[in-house]
Length: 447
Image (tube, one colour):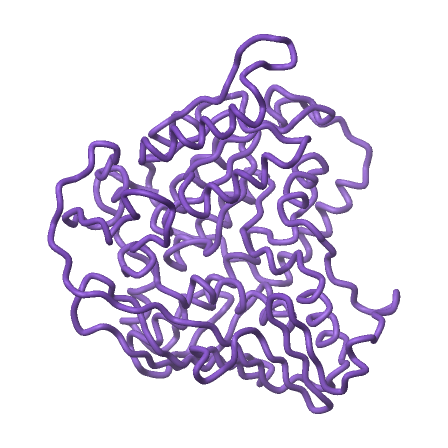
């Protein structure tokens, strides 16, 4: 996992991305023989072998989803919590039965270190569902080992890591999908198609809203449980004493405390923001770029263990003049509201509304812009592994959506207007803000 950091990042502009995508599409259309090594030990007609890295609250849910697909087979699980990894192993073996099709007992392997799982030549793809500070390193290792990758959102904890991750995944030609499953929901897709096809006139503003997390008081240090590899759990994050609300519950799969600690995540701005800001970008057609100005403000806990933002308000301005306001749902209601000169479209999970109402039954014609259609997020990932096509939530799009959230977090922390160059991915007016584009990693971890 140790390597020298590249001195120069490969910045991908929208024009460059579309050009490279066109070349890839043309190549895909030409008859070719795909070597068996692309799929590990299995040819395309057989099952895709999957290793699950992280089997906690979200990871266990993703594991159960994968179990529902006959074209996939989970052969390994990994977690730093030995109780959770044992439970996941038993769940997988119970689902499949320990007998393989040949009658030989194979079962499901269990690991405490993701590097051991990634090193297996017989694994085609990995599902990475770890705390946010542990997203980049497993994905880099998997890409370099020739694995295809599903990664839960948000993509990364810093914009610099996001750029490196996107460049690496594409350099190694891996199929990648981030867990932005709203893209595989017909309501969100139709909302974005209505906006991008001009049904509400010229787009003026986008309003994004979602909830926030509470804080908590100081927490006393506790003995590290014998079932938790706490040193590995901390990984590249700064050293801190163990306490239960820093990590995850000792029993059960309740919401973990790390989601509310800045060393491991950015709070709801990336928790829910990675979903709704992604839809805002999709609807605006800005999936491969970003805003040019950002200003934000937020309330932060004055003490206690949980230290991410509370109530907040961010305004993003794009080169087109469109403004996106992203706030807690006391100001903007939960979901995404697109406002134009001739109407509006509002969407959230399970609900789509518009003005005029006739938009709701408005058909998108074959000569109009029809967005990528996926009706099952994990199914789309598995299909793309076999076809080698791009998923509905690919790595560069995921990076840009995550960057939007992290730009907002930086603006909230600094409390002043920032100017952003979305091609160079640098602030043009604030040295301190540029220093917040990356974070140091605790030794011995390096990218």
